[in-house]
Image (cartoon, rainbow over all chains, first blue to last red; front, side, top):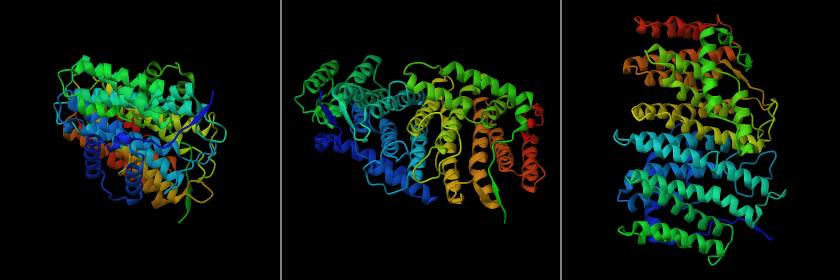
Length: 269
Length: 269
């Protein structure tokens, strides 16, 4: 019944060329979209908080599943960017110094007020990016993806639930120390749900069929479990991590006529 | 160069039967949509914060302009509900006790942590409502409305900018006391922008033509200026209020073949 501590994401998979290439495309898209313009006082912190939030595997997974089902990266680039924005907003709000939680131990470039507002500004911007990405033919797919993202980052089994769980389980010293079953609960709702969402969005936008999309939903979920467990300090040979990887590989078998080697790198840790 | 203080919205127009009927429809829709379900710990505060946030004229205006252009209320009910949710989330976060702002003088039923999370959960839920409201024929209109709402509640001339202005202008005692020109700036970006957005959304969803929609954009803006100035304690015979009302009536003249008496009640104060 030992307690574990959350660490910064150890993500050796970010050293794989495939992830790096996907992530570079997303950042390039965002840098082009979010210029530092007037009012500087609003856009400068927005820019800063978006590009300094820890990198995750969620946005890249969205492009990867789009490619897996035969789509082109650009079809999912707005959704991937929106996901990166949602994660940056979540990260920013998670580290806000509130009066009823201990001062977070990250370096704050801006004051809490500014960080609160910036996080609040980033989320609608993500939805705007997505809503504007439609050339007029794809609007139903975009709306589908919006429902997926809203649910994953909102309440009802998504990030908000996970954050609530984290608060509940955290020690009164504010350290994120949890029991294994608590971690599993948080990881399922957080990394599991977000990766699952990312995988689905890419599948939808790449034109995947319903069965493909449901397989990707599960595949993404297992990728998230692996990434999340590793983040909490579990070793790659831990029972739960090994199990998640096996289940993820099972789901990929459905895509046997497709090129799966690239997306398999998301199971590297 | 006197300073004025923001008060709770004095909104005698909420006593008009038209506003009351529109607002009742929106609340009924929301109550049906947001049931208190598991996890209670997430949905109970969400429900509470949504239904106790101060009522505004924005969501009702969205239904009113939909009717003005010949649409039916139900076509704009999800957008109106989403607008109400965005306003509730904004109100909740505006009153969060942060370490770098004075303790807000409203009664808090939930702790700051819970209020932060709930606000964060409400916004995606608003977008979800909207994304789900499409029967498959209307997706382009819905995406248009999403762009409008994202911009109004986000950065770049919307609510976030106004909130930043409020912080900037507020006294170090945290009282919202501003000079007239500062108030004008905040009201333009806040109430002006939101009412303008509400009016446009209703026009788009009701099937208004482009010229109608642009007239409604201006009409809504003036309605917002009036409502905002009154909220800050300006009298109804104040020069700026009188001017905004005249300009609003000018815009309505474009709709001379339509029934404008109902929507004119939004100029009552």
